[in-house]
Length: 168
Image (cartoon, rainbow, N blue to C red; front, side):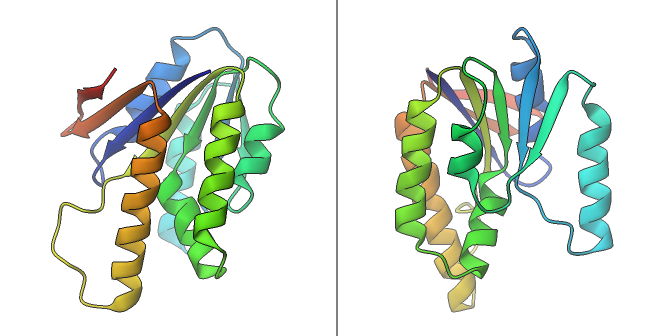
């Protein structure tokens, strides 16, 4: 198993860099999308991401059961998960047990037989949110990122489109 975590802020180039990492490997590739299109802006973002991917990408939508989606992939197939931040948002809004689901996700990542690249936002670099839900989210995202980074062979932090190797 090889796990790479690509972190960064909004519009830092995370997804594009992660796609490039996976495309360096022999295809076909799997793309696990966690986004849900609740509004026109999200519809456009999803369309933009899809337009960058060739037909060699197999896209699987998994806004909730990310661990199950990972477990169901063919052995050895390279996969890109984009992104943990939206998955966590979906699960928090569903009032899921975030600790248990994070642990299940870590198990699924560790059990993968193949290259795995995971995208996530670094949300802890800005001001402290003023409301309790936003603070809970920021803290949960930080813990999730730490958990995945601890398991990862490589961690890359994206700044202005430039990859900075943090681990590996």
